Image 1 (cartoon, rainbow, N blue to C red):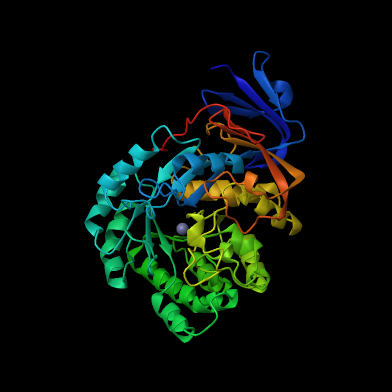
Image 2: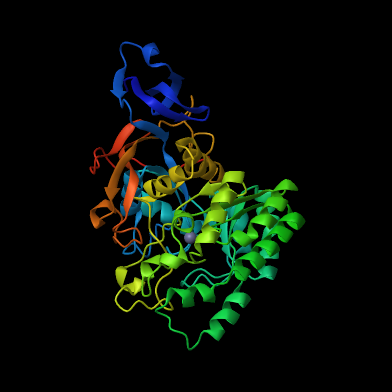
Length: 449
Ligand SMILES: [Zn+2]
């Protein structure tokens, strides 16, 4: 492979945004240097005023293959990822069939992924009601960590865990040294609230919002923090939606508990006040809450209580979104945003005075560390994979179905004008996305520690 030099006036490095040249050979960044230090024989890609970001890492994606490939699949998800500026996806253990709760299921997923991926990927393992004895073997087989639900996830093939079942799993999780990603909502507050809404109008977003109260998240997070203190495992709270838990999380972190927190673009950039009745593309769990709640989540990011922003890309066939009848009770809860998450975030972040260095920390470095690939992914620095995104932060575009490269172009962002355009994405030095095209080949592979 010839030496390549990626040059820009604005390279987002861990030390800030600055002019630089990235010397790339064998798919790795060999050096970050000045543009006038590029060796004469290098093949130069000069992006001028466009920004070079580290390829984004999404540690929370539902690819749904094998088993529910008609919902998404590796080929579609990874192309949408490349178009959105992502170069590694960590795939959740549920919605696929079999769910990734045994090594055999993990091997089936690896087989399904082979030859189909346009970006790199990594698997999470699942912890369900009855697979505690599979935890060590999944860890040894290479999962990045584990995912569990404290409430019924509402899909065949993956069960929730009770506190007792979770306690049976936690010593094994702690010994593995891998993180446990927890869907933090407890069933009782949800069931109580839902019971009171039996005769409510379920086309109204307000009804759905009332059915998943802040209290469900807050009580689950308090339970998980107590268990984290007791068992000393690495706890990660997925898709934090309520600002009411920020105090507890801040305190836990200041005590030195090993807890990390993610939220999603839709909790930061959408507000319940704006969601029209029947608008089921906005349904996700936990739900999108008030504008004031959303502003407090931004504060949580600013102070570092929230560590990262991931998509929770969770597609389904359009019929399951109940778009025609707008019934929030039965519509699938999940929002797909791989192709647009970066501009969605940039549009709102830059209005609040954040920089692309903040975006890179939240959407690349943080998720890479969580997914166990922080030694090679998530930063622009010597020794890291040359996963690079060329981004025009000042251009804007209208979100149309053609801009959503995943299988089913359903999105709450359709019709929005967003700031920032992904112009190109490079995976280990090779161009995988450019101006709406996918040159090259599906050369993505599983990240192995
Ligand atoms: Zn999810």
